[in-house]
Amino acid sequence: MPQSGGHDVPVQLPDGVPAPDGLVEAALGYEAALMTDDLEALEEYFAPGPSTIRGDEGGLLVGRETITRFRGRRGGAPKRIIEALHVRSIDADHAWLAAVTAPLTGGRGLVSQLWERQDGVWRITAAHVSAPPRALDRRIWRVVGEPLVRPTAAGQLDGHTVAVKDVFAVEGFPLGAGVPAYLAAAEPAPRSAASLRALQAAGASVRGIAQTDQFAYSIAGRNSAYGTPPNAVVPGAISGGSSSGPAAAVAMGHATIGLATDTAGSIRIPASYQGLWGLRTTHGAVSVDGVLPLAPSFDTVGWLTRDGETLAAVTRASLDTMDARTPGARLVTAPALADSATPEVARAFAVAVDALDAAGSEVGTLDDPAFSTDALDALYAAFRTVQAAEAWAQHGPWIEAHPGALGDDIAARFAWASTITAEAAGEARAALDGARAAIDAALGDTVLVLPSAASVAPSTDADGAEIEAIRTATLRMTAVAGATGRPAVSVPGLTAGGAPIGVCFVGPRASDIALVERALGWSEILKHD
Image (cartoon, rainbow, N blue to C red; front, side, top):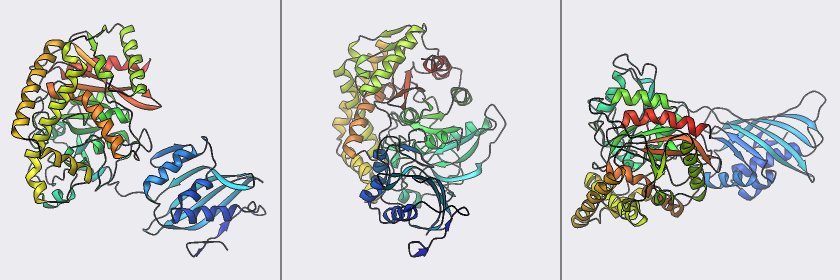
């Protein structure tokens, strides 16, 4: 009887139909290579070419090269043994195999594979892996319930569930900010954040507290302590941050609303990467009472949803309509902003602009010094400096008292922030004031249109240099709304290289409700492009 990990493996066959020669040995050889993380051997067990596929709870990987890259970045498979092999022959050179797996950590899983004999060698052409069900995916959630917190009244959000980014106070629970050491010392919150109470008062319940990048100081969605939340739309890609947990929870159908923050793009970017709707509200329009700050000059509360109607309902339930404004009818683009995008994103965005213009949305091109390449570069540099200075003022003392508590990437960002002098921060604030006045004069009440992010979601195995380059290009675009305090809604509907990319509409301050409602119409144009 064949063995797996020193354990005898019964092979189940239909009566009178033997397994094809060499198949069981190949299957167990593959398993042995998997358990030793022999990447070269594993690659050879999968059929070469772009048609080979492998699926699991994270989605479908297409092509042997993609599968090999996935294996290389995950650091080995969980240890397990094979309890049984079920083989069904199709013909002499093709067979379907199901393996019942027993992870050493408990539970039972299932692997199904389609094998083909190619030039005398058995190789996998299709596979699906089912691990034991998770009690809780800690990449996405810190804590969940059914519900975790109930609504306080009935209203227009009845039946909706909220994934709360772990920078909002939730009554009875400590706030963790994506940092285990910070969570360990935190006390349960005596009262929920004002923005969360508004959702509860409109009928929404809290599904759970979702993960965030550490201290929300990132746009990648990676957390060295809890892992990278999966991207439900682009398997093998990052989810985008820092509102990574709420975005993943909404995209995967765990919740209908993500309550999040956006300082430099932390709602718009994960929305773009995962095909969601996302709104960064006008700075100061939604109370930040009960929200852990990062950079108060730019921090805003906002939401992520799977559809525009839900986002519109959340916006109406959360914002005071007394001082609401209506954006102008005209849309404008700024070529120097789109220049930050990758070629594939720029092409997709150009098609979107043509579609909006053809549908009568009067898209113009903004030719103003406030949107020149040099002006935008200066705006980003000033924004980045002020953000860093404020982030260090908020969290520097705690970080210095807890060395080693942060992941390397976030620690490096805060280390740089600690070098910003008061003089440099003051000069940057003055530059931002001037840039804001110039942008306001250039835009007036028109709506600025730009890609929501500079690229599609990068791969989870992208190196630090690639992530930093994408971060810089994207923040150069998102900083316009951040620096001016304007609302910005990311609308799905475009694809670039097969992955989603959002179109961002930046409106005048206090136009949030009308901006989202107008975006519902723009999204229909994008869908039919």
